[in-house]
Length: 226
Image: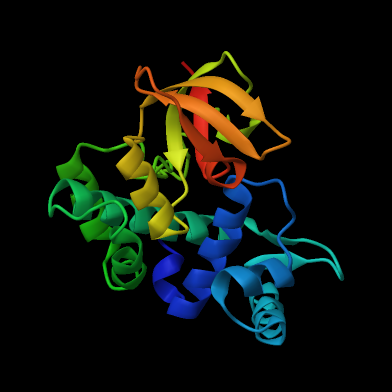
């Protein structure tokens, strides 16, 4: 899986990783507009990069259509995702970082480490299946142990669910849920869903008093049936 990625520039590695990550938890097609928003680049810059990566056989891009990874592009993307998530896990488990502090550190370190070091970190950690936010860690062979999870905001009253993932896009969201006592594997009892108010009432970890979550916040949480 990592044989190709070491030959690529850091910018190429980032593009491939973002294309894969954008498809991981969403059915929304990956477009130049979506990539520009996620990466903070102008659409014209992204269009030129996509054209270049398509010419290198790493992406496919139908005119006005979705951007997709080729087999070679997917292998390189998964190698970068594996690096990122193992580094995040190491920073939390071994160095005491908070789960809201590791994303930016991993963004830098993932380009500097070798596959040998990543494998050594994986061995040291005992081959974890997920990172501190619940995102699955690709295995050495390129397979991904993805959980069958759905977003919390889709849950209805009376359901008991277990937290499987919390999006790490915004560190403030992670701190907010930490303050509420919501972490990976926390059980939530959905008391009531109020679409008219845009809120979801849940009890956290068996507590008696429910908390009110905005549906926008609930979209950042993925759950499985408890």
